[in-house]
Image (tube, rainbow, N blue to C red; front, side):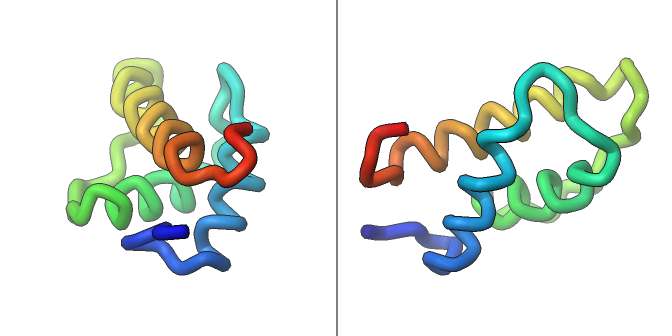
Length: 77
């Protein structure tokens, strides 16, 4: 399976962490989510604040990562 630009280990970690995120992104996950989002997109966009006005950016990042996992998941989960 191709997990690029992530390694298989990074993909497994992403899958475990992103599947636990529903409608609320815990503060402790923000750095990980944004770093991984940038890595998946081959981007260096600055991390937005955790305030309400940045909710759209965070939702976009989480959606991108969830889709990344879904597209590459052997089980289709």
